[in-house]
Image 1 (spheres, one colour):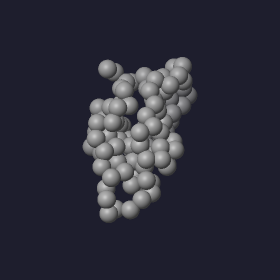
Image 2: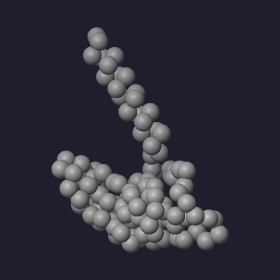
Image 3: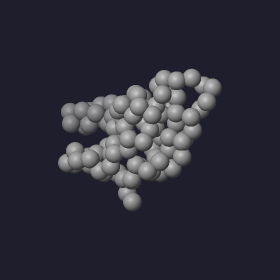
Length: 109
């Protein structure tokens, strides 16, 4: 299934997928540890971290593929999740800023 039409949201132990056109909930997963949730779309996997646990979700369905409690590494939210396939928020912000700058420059000509 193509999940280009989804927006992923993580909050209070939930991971959700919303339809980007309607805002309707496509799927919701409440099977993770509660707390602040950090998400990373890593190609065909949605990686979620909450309270020291890492989960791999199917981005099309929200089903948990695997999880790892990362015992011995402590609790809390990670400062960052990165991968070769996924794009970090910083990179996405840079790309959006470059697109706006390019659009502004071409509109002036």
